[in-house]
Figure 1: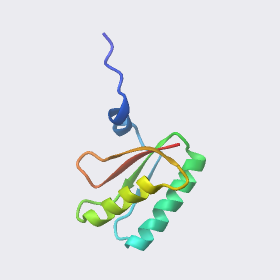
Figure 2: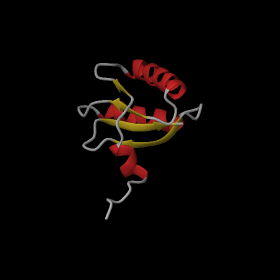
Figure 3: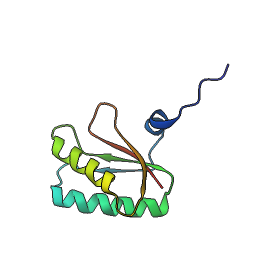
Figure 4: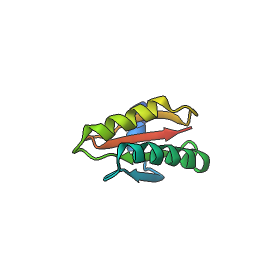
Length: 95
């Protein structure tokens, strides 16, 4: 019998990212700009793919800021998102 097919969040979390943005050491203002530019670039060149945005575990401020930015995605580039297992970032499927 073949293994069950993953769907939803399980599938998203299991996929290999085409790109990763590491935000360690960035301020909130820098984070806003970097996330916006990262999403614009990778939605254009890697639409439908998965990317990782690393915020780190030591501060919830960037984790929450990035969650809010993904939720607000004005240009509708984010198809789905989930927190990384163990925390510290986001897994994002682009449109």
